[in-house]
Image 1: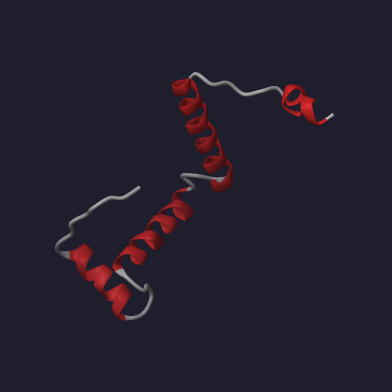
Image 2: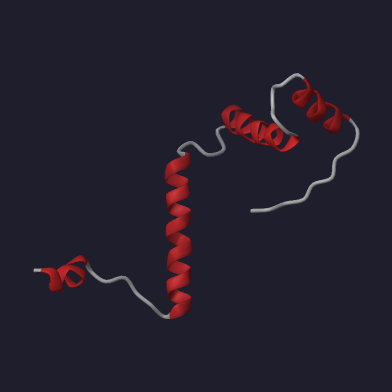
Length: 82
């Protein structure tokens, strides 16, 4: 996901300071760190890996539905190799 953000005031001061003292390599890194800190504090996504896999599966299902495709059962997919 690409997003363009514009900050002014206190957020800019905080991002600049994080880079200046070496806490983050860039303002973008500082924002990433903030996002992970937000998740640690509020437990927005408890199992990140499970959530990412679930989203990928849903994307794949939607793409297959759009193309009119369906999953092959394991037995049918492996039949020609037996």
